[in-house]
Length: 559
Image 1: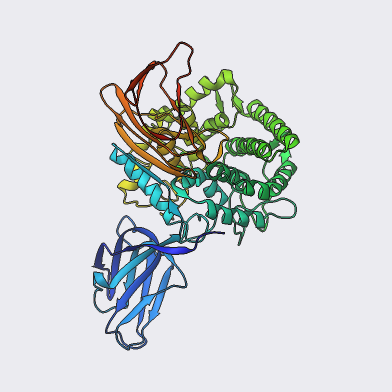
Image 2 (image 1 turned 135 degrees about the vertical axis):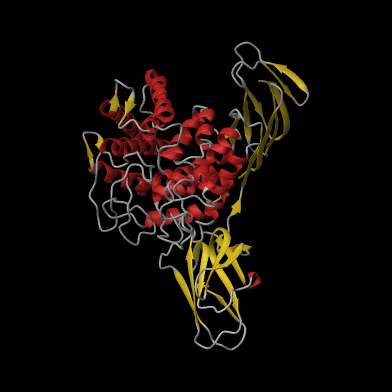
């Protein structure tokens, strides 16, 4: 069901240095997942060479020892080559002990290995900081996918966590052709559902890993997103019964219309809302956990309504629409704080999730949005202040509400917590925690990546239309970005948007593949535009969306 894992790149060492008696430190220059090949000469029979691996050094330059190593016992019969093909490692640094002399650079190489999927995207802009963040996200996925699914981290746990997966699915499927990988991974999820409908937090499911409903519900949301990205209705048909069965399990633990904590089991532990939040955020607060999980459940009901529509099950569609509406009203009734227009604990995720989950009444949208800005700019000093669940939620909210300036300002922060803080502290892959604790090759914080394509690049699939058959093109331009080059290889072919901001004028070069319809949205107030050297003027009451079929176009307008 999925491509084989293959060697994708060969990486030479950046630096080799002495690290103690008969011990040397090899720095590969960046994190990677795969194999190491070392050539030895002059070894004695039975001489032991130990290779320890880690993804970062401590602040004082010490090796981060996780008892994570290979051991080679020499034959002593001349030139020898070690390459452990029976396992793999995720690392940047290798501590080699037992050698009498420093190894030469040409005696060492590493192989980046991952499932043999195709890259299907590209993003570049005038801001080097945005490019660095984007490229770090892009590369991180290549270090998480050696096994036909996406793992949390490839060295400590190697588990296909549904929470990390949900957080990164839209970004991962935008950047790469992961149709076969998700077909494989979703089958693993269908395989681990229990007889009573209970779901674990990871698939495959070797032990009671931690998580919460956002982890279990991967079977619904990831299946729906895979359909939207690749148009695969077979997955919807195949996994619909498992989705329904899990929602029946959820009903058992709903009290007065709201999902509450369910028991730990021998295959599942904890009950999280958000996870891996920065200092100052209480991710365990009951109000926050309940707002997050019930907002997610509202999204699940919405997905199920849409899936039922695709599968032509009108009664199910009505049922899930009703469940969604009832839950939305209940969340608002229980968790809305009228005095300050917040939900739950008032953190970023507790405000953004109700907004994208349809909880916030229309007449309160503006006030809750103001609360979100206040929480971000005043209480959090303009930083992202959420964990793995919050990042894709805030990203989706920002795209839909054209909050490009706010998102841009959060991404540009160089202090803790933030992506540039990671990069300034040597990150080549995203971390498990904002402060760098534990893993520094991780799938926690990759959900932000879709913003580069959907907001700054301006390519958004039309809601409910799969496989980019219809797209909405509307670049969201933060002050400080002057040009962008973006493309996606869709199931229909290459879709590209390149724009450049001149003196009060935006020039776009657009490529639309055969079988795709695009609507180019002009900003509010723009009444004139130029398309292929012909000037047009919008008539009174005419929509500001310019429809285009397949082809290559130049369009420009005064800002």
